[in-house]
Length: 456
Image (spheres, rainbow, N blue to C red):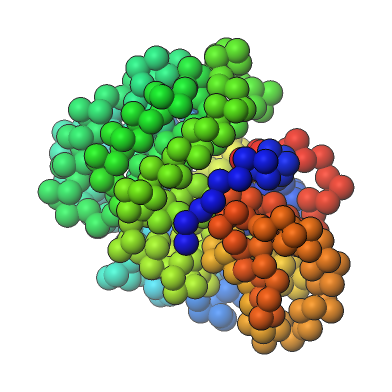
């Protein structure tokens, strides 16, 4: 299904809203949920015996990217990792007291920060510790984020050796002026060489991240970036809208707001991006992701097993995500739990013999029901009433009568179709999928929407 770009509707609906990497959104997390709740939910999860997904956060970077919204620590000292890994191992040991580690791990992801900040020896050591504690499924997705500018000798070989089969890299933009303005200089020649090395080593899936809305970007410049990205032939591409929030991310104060592209240029860039990637054979997976037809992300969408978590779209629905390391977030069936964000607080909790939970959210039955509807829409562009009714023992039209009434305006505008007891998102509605999902969100209504990025 080709995405249709309707500029008038996009302008009408372009307002702040959640990205729905979870429901309820992370803005609902609070410090009334803590370690005791986490332990209880971990023990309950053992009874369901769902497969596991592990996320491990490496917070260190060698240099600051001024657009970045992640929780990172900038350091030129490589010895900072030694102490951090020792605390990570202690957290893993504590998790093993409450989590049935014989459950198969079907996904393992190292994010950051920059995981390749670690030395080859530390990569082997950390991977070994994880595999000593957990049972990694032979067919597991084992992925890592890398910064190609700081790869050390033999590092890609080491990552492959310890079992990684997928790699994600930030590229953002290839224009020199844009790169200088965001403090991330990264040439096409470097990317070409790293992609070639990754392919030769047998990595199964390669992802590249781009960002539109950065300083000094123009449609003409970004067209060249897209052309060069297509030449690199990644299996997946994520194209994110730059959220300029200097009041939340102090590093962004280094960016001159007068250099950011105007809204009309951003819309032109977005339309061009979708058109070019689709013409190059990529499928529009949803919101900001593209994948080749044979990629597992595209296969999961066809099979209805696509899901979303805090890393974005994922091929594994029905798994329990366990977060490890400072700032990481776990997603169990009916509870979300986030570790302390600062490394100091993370260390203090573990020194006190506590799982380092800062905050979280416990889901009620209504939350779980609405999450299923929202994720169906976000991932599959379709929600079938009968499927929801069977799973939750409700009458869909009766339970969501107000929401269905709200959707009739969107139906008149051609964003979706209400027929055959289903909500079907039409090509015109795919770019506005967050707005459609927000109709079923009990938390976003009446809230200060400024906490969210804009939907386009």
